[in-house]
Length: 320
Image (spheres, rainbow, N blue to C red):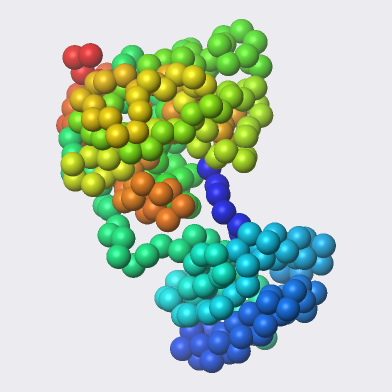
């Protein structure tokens, strides 16, 4: 799942940031001027060859035009922090604040640019769940994406959903039987999704149709969605739920094991599955993800205590 206005970066080796900071400030000042004046061709001319190839004039104009229509002019750009491959600035637009990640090559040309939601420094990152949890379903499910390494879990690349899971059901090595273009052919479709712990329902998104398998809805990323808040202020997100299957409401307090909804194929999903993630805030746009360990589950037929499932595991609640 991806969200936000962005230009995907092509990042290469950098020289010392301490030597580049003054140059970054100069480039950012020019970028702000050209953006506010609507001179997007001038911004294009600030790109290096690789960036120009990735963002030709029409694409550059469309991107910055959409950005300005959505957020308005820039009133302030303030240095925020360094990363291994870029510098991040806090940018105040007319309507809201965003983060700008920017990389300059050795010729002070823009080689990477990315606009993301601004994460307030007051938000504390979350390492893992403190609340004891069961799996959010009955029956045996397959971990399609899960773990703390990129090879096991593509979500690692996305800070707001790092360590998230994608669960589905497999039988004899397949996830469906029958017509692959029908959701009902998939073993996970319509399966009950339950609360992994006592919690409060803090966000519900409904009314989104399930996709035809193989297609996806990139405009409504998480599809039908539920977010729970634990007593430890942990936020658990359930995404891609089945259309018209959500049976809880915002503000409701629920017990572990309570039925929430059914597994579906809504949002940015190509086949029925459950996306489960732990966040440090209810807003996915500014969240940082954390690891979810489950209290006592069966993993490939063996009992595991306080376990973080990884790609390829077959998992099930014990005693349910």
